[in-house]
Length: 350
Image (cartoon, rainbow, N blue to C red; front, top):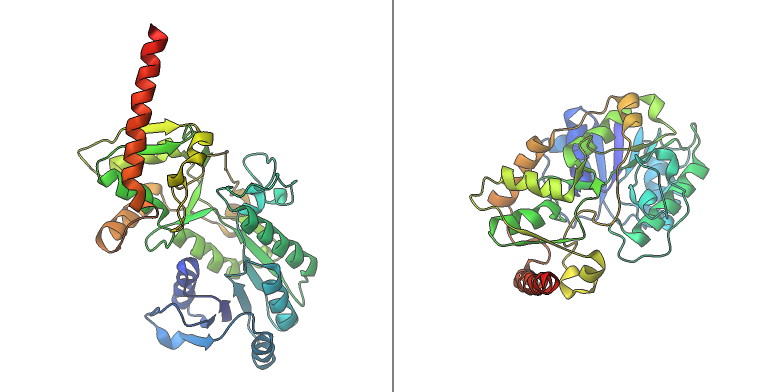
């Protein structure tokens, strides 16, 4: 097939590109050229350098070329999708949109496991600290509303994939590395809230493969899909597994503090990116029955993909995890919390 990706060099999209090449497809990437990447079989990859916001470029592109599939991996605002629709309508075989489970997690309430039909549930009051991204989820929901209003099997056939947190080697958000680095420094861990809310992530290779496998299942046209691991863990369970896999001779103590108190601490936020990663505020369990039934989706076991992730971050990654510059502040707070808590226990016993 002749395929165009808007994006194609990012964390998820570079894996999608790799798998498309492996399947023998002819791939063109519309990129800004700011992220250098080398695909092994470069003859099967063409590059168009430009801005996705350039309406003239997109119009000219689709007037000259017909693509069997258009993947949009980096649409974050409605106007970006509107521009693509105007240029590509009637000139592509199908359109595949990278959405997000945030379209659910900005809702006031959802029923778990969360099914694909719950994406338009009533919004919660605006909550800037929503761990799934409040404004991000609102914008992605607007994009989907537009896409489904324009879905047409002849002129603009739409499919959407909604992943949760995406993990694996080279993750630019370094979510797993946040905890890996702190476990390996052999100091106590601070965890917001109880750590008992269940949730899912997805291994980047599994997600990328799902994007590619859509091509071989025409029944996926006109459908939206959750794509996540079938393994469900609380943050406490995740940390326990991670500690065991790191084979450290030191098991760190874990201090839980109330979420409301944590939110007041300066170390709870970092300009470097997400800190104290993964959901600590509400259950986040997503049904994957639809993707399993429609395209035979399978997920990689946690121990396998996490082994690869640990290896990459320890042996190939350079630099710290987000917020690690505040690590001493974390330790100081834990010491003070434990001291005050011990005093409180003694007073209560008296």
